[in-house]
Length: 199
Ligand SMILES: NC(=O)c1ccc[n+]([C@@H]2O[C@H](COP(=O)([O-])OP(=O)(O)OC[C@H]3O[C@@H](n4cnc5c(N)ncnc54)[C@H](OP(=O)(O)O)[C@@H]3O)[C@@H](O)[C@H]2O)c1
Image (cartoon, rainbow, N blue to C red; front, top):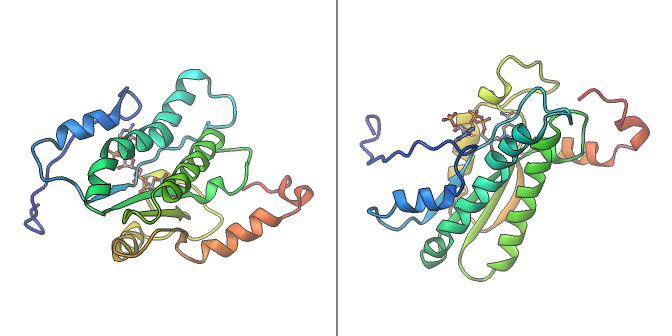
């Protein structure tokens, strides 16, 4: 608001502790002009997500990474369709292949990718643009303090690409783009090689 003289409205919401985030967002938008764009760069991962989290922590990761984004899309979908607008989801290269870490996070991101593919299929030809960015490493809270095997992109740089693409047609692609090659290689590694990787 200060930098760009834009009107900014905020809503504080813990996605891990809200039964219906979509309804809460919709209620908060009630007095505002109908939305024509929805971007959902939400996500949380944990270092102890190794298959032993237990029900509560598993539920929280699924809520933040899968359930909340889906319910928010569903709640805003009628307005976005009416506006012939754009909905943007964010996946992760962690979902390319099941590894011995980030297990629930990766499962949730793969689920979200599936949901966005279905959304694109269901509404193709109706004017709604459905865009999904499969992100590589970013220099952000999520990777703070981690030793990463490949360079992390600056969030501002990726955000500029996301915004520059908003008027384009539907797609599902990697960002930064070179991660497509890394993902292709990981996806096609033979199991006896992949199972030895500590990535
Ligand atoms: N960093 C990476 O290397 C990487 C790699 C692949 C994909 N991604 C994806 O990129 C997107 C952006 O993440 P980022 O890297 O920019 O990390 P980030 O800075 O931690 O941003 C994550 C966002 O999710 C929100 N969030 C997390 N838990 C929440 C909760 N319980 N309730 C409400 N909001 C919550 C955070 O809100 P607050 O700011 O209020 O906490 C923040 O806005 C996410 O979808 C992430 O999964 C990141």
